Amino acid sequence: MTGTAPTAAPRDPHYTLPNDWDLAAERLALLGAAYDPQSITYAQQLGIGPGSRCLEAGAGGGSFARWLCREVLPTGRVLAVDADPRHLTDLPGHGGEVARIDLVTDELPVAAFDFVHTRFVLLHIAQREIVLDRLIRALSPGGVLLLEEGDGLGVRDEMPGAFGELWRAFARST
Image (cartoon, rainbow, N blue to C red):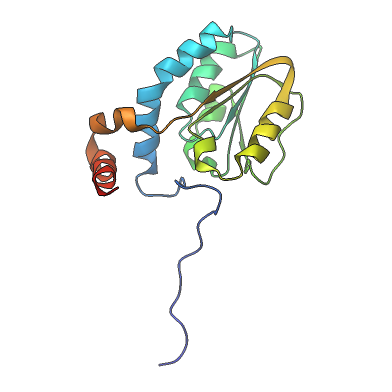
């Protein structure tokens, strides 16, 4: 027999946890459940409310973008961007916009948002300086950039299901 064995399509080199993973929906839902309350508190303290123009960069599962829709619409705007927006299909039904944007290679609207938010995005991207520059340029004058980054280790022991088991096994092996 001649020829070569088929190979899997290469993963996007920019992101460590792609949204096409079979446990991605569970991972994103758990992250939303664990971290949305604090993100919401921060946004409220920053004055995000009706009429705010918001960018959720690296929107993942969209839970925070859905909250933004409830808070700022109909007079505001919510744009949720992700390199793989497969978990954001319901956001237009909430009044939000969705765009397939790779934060490393694609441009964002310039000076268009009062509030730009990311959570657990930059830690996955080696070219984070490029992304940070784009996020800053997306802010309108006087706008606020909220970056929530971390290692996520504080919630690993509480994560239920297959993803929690996988996370704990990974943590034991390192």
